Amino acid sequence: MMKKITIICLVILMLLVPSCKKEEEIMASVTIKTNKDVSNSSILSDENFGDSDKLGMGYKDPNINRTFLGFDLSLIPTNAVIIEAKLHMHQRSIASWGSITFDIYRVTGAWTENVLTWNNQPAVEGTPTITGLTCAHIIANTWRDWTVTSLITEMITNSADSMMLRIQTESGADESQVFSSKEYGTDYQPYLIITYELPSKVNVGDAWKPASDMKVNVGDAWKLASGMKVNIGDAWKEVF
Image 1 (cartoon, rainbow, N blue to C red):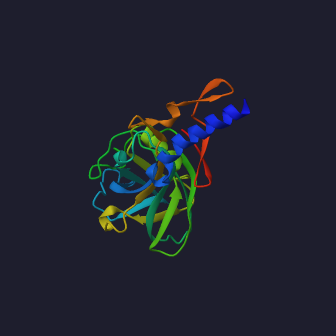
Image 2: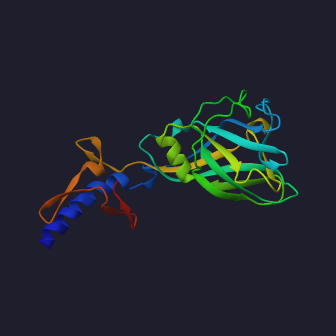
Image 3: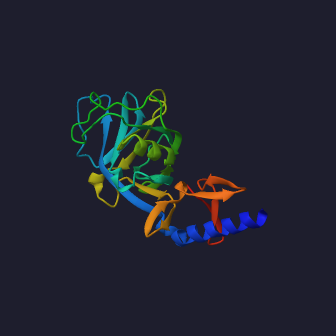
């Protein structure tokens, strides 16, 4: 019986390995810059700042600033599995009162960069997807980045294209930072770096089929290949 299982597993490996012999064939990384970005102000509640080259986030008595970022995520295949996503923002200046702690929400409502204000800001999810991020009091004109993998996965799943950044406590002690918007220049606008993986496929009859749909015979029982692993370049990779 063991000999039979070994032979069958070797055959499956021979089928799967050729389609995955180059990892870059199923894994990719893409950079996506904002296609819209804007901040609003609670004390200038009807004013739009879509043409500003700055993005503010924080509280400075009595004003609150929130930042909205939009991205074209259509570059990511619908069947992609997000491995990692990072948000990068260019910190323009540092506030004298130090670092900020902020959350990121998935935006559920529609908005336009040159229309959004405090009074008409779009709806967001009731709870943030990403919480407790920090931006320290450091040297100005510095790039900062944060991991937002779960948020991008959620956005793609829900066909969303934007996020809202706001500090956790919009009252009390002053807490604010300023970043560059796309109006400051393409070299400084916010962007995402998303690494994703596509489902494994094998070539059957000159047609590529999802490996997860295939079955292997283990102990006289046919099992779906999904969840099993193959050895590629001395590393075990899971079939999904």
